[in-house]
Structure formats: structure tokens, C-alpha cells
Image (cartoon, rainbow, N blue to C red; front, side, top):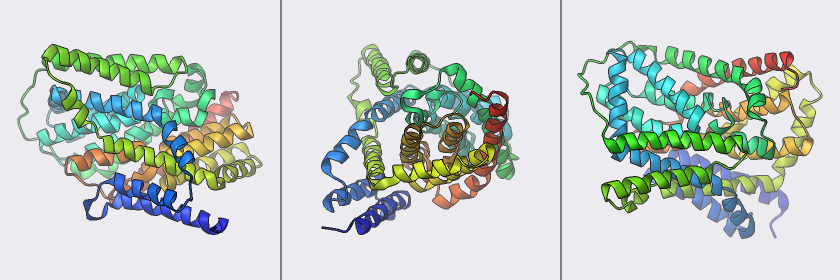
Length: 426
């Protein structure tokens, strides 16, 4: 029998190496094999039981359904010319200015993230933006980074803007009015500061002009139907959130319904679309859920409770700053999904509310802008780029994130502290 200390050390080592290899992808081997291999190793060494692994996979069902729905919508949009139309509109509206195209991209990213979630920005918006910048023949990185960064910076405007929000609060998600009082102003600070940093960081690329002529593309009937479907999904998500329901099943059902209508209308089999869904991405997410439970099983929850208890003995504003930066940086070591699960469970077990909870929430949502490992959205963003033969390295992302994340996090928690002083019960 392996000693407990050695088993815990080995478990952490396997999880860390698996995530690192997922990002590096030696020999171009897909991400899922590295994380899936890590899970198999944990099972073979009996560092986690098959029952616990099965439970972990089952707990991710809502996330899988949500991603399936978003992937379906993305493929429908691509197949029916929505991305081409959107790219022509964006480039045309930029009127030859890279700076204006960047602002338009960022603005669209805000709307998509707030209304459809940060994962939708990674899965649906990123391919559309890539189409636009290729059409405009400009340096793509400023616009692609705008997608990645706004996916996290705007992800706490509404509860539905990030699945991690529901993970942290679980069944105690505040009513929409209370949520907006607590997070709307900090969200504005996050969005504004992130934009300012990105605009400064890519200033040289954005001084260029768009010299090519852009052909105006008209949206056909099927494309308009897809757009109407996206509007329906937004309505479904807002309704489900207001009723306190899970978001995955209604999103998936809405996407399947739209797919069925288009298949009947065009008399084409939907099986081709089903084959285009990145099932390996769903397997990757499932494997990450198993690793979450593996880390939780060695006492991560107890450590989180102890850390929160120690922070509570400090002045409220100091504690809030320490917590949000600790959580923000921690995301990039273990991903915000596991950290959100652990932090949420620790908050519930410790009966902690108010500013401390808000600080954890901001750290979980905004912290991932430091590195690619930070959130599922940034990992999905990276996979979307690799699918199009573009690669952004860990170091490339870190160079941008090390400027954008701390500045936005500081502005956001400062706004949260100010709002709590004005409205102490938020």
C-alpha cells in the first residue's frame, strides 16, 4: 500500500504534468490524450477510484450539453455563411481602420460573453473573428487576443456569462438585482481596463490600415434563421438563469431544434454537423473534471477553508484584495473550474457571504486572463486557433496576460470594495 504522503505528492505531480503536456502538445499530439492519459494513470495507480472518476464525469453533464449546443451553433453559423457575413460587416464598418476593427471586435465580444457566456465567445466568436481578419489581411493576434481576454473580463456581468459563476454560488446564486448591484460596476472596470491595456500593448499593429477591398456579403435565408436561433438561445439562457435552472440542457435542446429545422428546410442530413462537433474537447473537459475530484480528494477543500478563515481576521478591504489575487493567480495553476468548485464548497461550508464571496467570484472569473491554463474558455480558444493552424504559445499569452490581468483585477476589486462600502448588504 502506498504511503498517503507519497500518494498525494504523486497525484499532484501527475495532474500538473498532464496539464503542462496538454498545453505544450509534444509532437503535436492532441490535448485530450495528455489529460486522458493522466486520468488513466491516476486510475491504474489507484490514486483515485473508478467510482469517484465516474461521479466526476457525471457531474460535468451540464457543461457537456452546453458545449454541444454551442458547437452546433458554431458549425451552423459557419456552414450557412454567418461568419462570412459578420466578417464583411465588421471589416466594412471599420472603414479601413485597424483600431476601429479592434474596438468592434471587443464590443461584439462583450455582447457574446454577457449574453451567451465566455465559452461561447471562445467557440462561436473566435472563428468568426479569424475569418474577418483573414479577409482584411491584417495581423490577427490583436483581434484574437481581444476575444480571449474579453471572454474572461466580461464574464461576471450576469450569472450566465460564465458557467464558473454558477459553480461558485451553486444553489445560492443571488437574484439578478443583487447580482448587478454587486458586480456590474466591477465588471465595467474590468472591461475598460482590459481594453485599455490591450489597445496599448498592440498599438503598433493597430496603427496599420486595411488596404484591401472587402466584398459585401448578403446573408441568405438559412443564415438569417441561424441568427434568429442565436437570439432564441439568448432568450433561453436568460430565462433558465432567472428560474435558477441549469443552462446546458436548454441550450443543447435549442441548438438541436434549430439544426432540425434547417435540416428539414434544406433537406440535408444533420449527421454531417454531428461529425463536426469536437467530441475530443468534451472528453478533455470530462478528464479535467476527474482531475478536479482527484485534487479535492487529498484535502484541497480543508486547505481552502483554513485560508478563508485566516483572511477573515484581516480588515475587510485587505482580505478582499488578498483573496481575489490569490484566487486569480491560483486559477492559472489548476484552472478556474476546479478552483471554483473548491472555493465555492469552502464558502458554503464556512457560511461566508458578502465582500469575501464577491472577491472569490472576481478572482475566479478574471484571474484566467493571466495564462492559457486559467479557464476552460481560454483552453477552448486555443483549441479553436489550433484547428485553424494557428498557434499561440504559453509564453505569448503570458506576456499579454501579465499586463492585462493584474491591472484589471485591481480595478475590479477596488470597485467591488467601493460598492460594498456604499451598499454593505450586496
